[in-house]
Image 1 (spheres, rainbow, N blue to C red):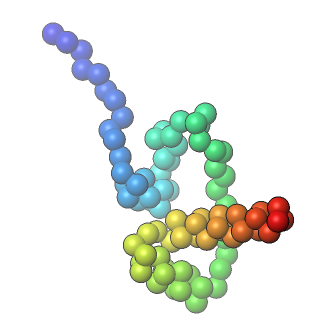
Image 2: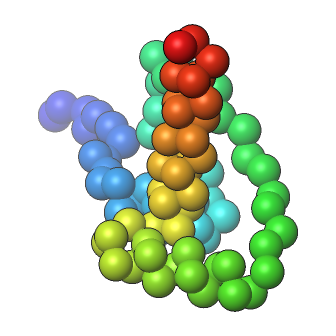
Length: 85
């Protein structure tokens, strides 16, 4: 009789976001040597800003966190472009 091999089930971006939002670890799904180091932060914002962020995230069909990361990275990239010009 063959032994069963247990492998980690494949997951989707939505599953990873759900697990992250629930406070569960998602690090097992990533190879740290291949990706960049990630560090968790806490960000305090006014309620009106969160409502606006949630509305824009819903319009785009992405999570609030993904929207914030995209906007911050876009802004940092544009600052780098201006400095190198």
